[in-house]
Image 1 (spheres, rainbow, N blue to C red):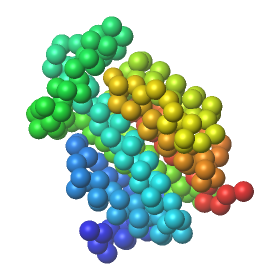
Image 2 (image 1 turned 45 degrees about the vertical axis):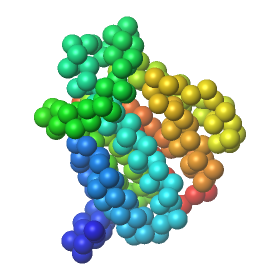
Image 3 (image 1 turned 180 degrees about the vertical axis):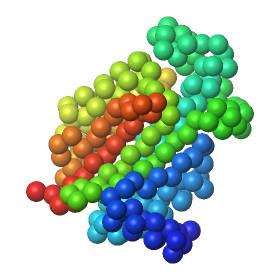
Length: 215
């Protein structure tokens, strides 16, 4: 529930052009619902409430990806594998999905113990606004190549239907999330370098940027 205090925080954040952040270790349904409500009010205050459904999808996609990246770290560490070694990465990913689904509670606790988080950040400035999802592990070389490949492929497709015709990558899930995200936002008029993926300090950041007025 968004209280009057939360509303004041949102307005103060927008007026001061400082980020408003929500941090979670697990991104369970309760946290997802809270972020959705916060996003809804934030967009209403900016006068772009019609973007809610699409940005909600984007935040969930990026936050789930970030949580998965965090989970990989504790999973690989628990098995004595080096996530930055391509051969060991393939070895670890062979059973990652099955093992972490079978022992979800164990890995959620390990995420908390390791201090690994997902942070959703809203920021508004004079001419634009952004939504960023941060997590405090650095993207592995193999992971970075996958993301770059998905971003590059997004420029090859004219529609979501084209993207859904891709062969799914079973080792990493459907592999269509970022493709869908970029194509969907393009259809809404987002242009230029509106999706950014980079590292900053000890964090990996995925950011969506939108001018408050579109040309």
